[in-house]
Image (tube, rainbow, N blue to C red; front, side):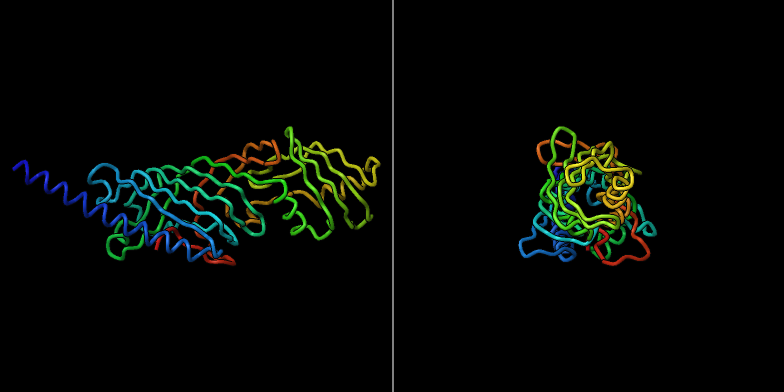
Length: 277
């Protein structure tokens, strides 16, 4: 009897792992199809929750890694109308060296607990669709040179710009053609989160052609540059990140906050995957 029991558990474990590996390969292929880049890399790794957890729809950890790619917005959504029977107890996302809507990101790391997926669909159609996301924590890292490129891409008024980040301040210099004047400018400011989805200049010292800006000129440039980055409008993240802390050090911005996989919007300009095929 005991060998039979062990044999049964071994069979469950084997077929469970076999199906999980199949899903991993299909998932990586599907995610790869929604992003751009000749050198893009995608991998998916899954850990079962115990010996029989995986075949029963209980996954302890799923890790999605991708790098060297481009996308027009967040590539993952949930579909809350489907079944929530399957569970992913820890969804880890590690994205590196990628460009989203014109902004290059050095690194985006997110750890999200208690996600659910449609288990019946996974079994019957070999497709995994996330149906509910928990709320976790994450961090986004942006380099100063990449912010320069993004500013020129986003703001038509800015014709030339350089960005330096150090000691919790951002220093922006350049040439702009604004409604009220054309001039060289410099801005030394903090970068703060606003409403969780915007990165904006605050506590700013502003010079035009080497002279302290008057109130009208000061307002003109701050109205132009703020928010420097709108995570939802500019990057189409649909609430995936809610920033609550920003650190400016050694040429990089580190923005931290709560993270989740957003619900699939009714209308969007691009069509990323819901998670897996």
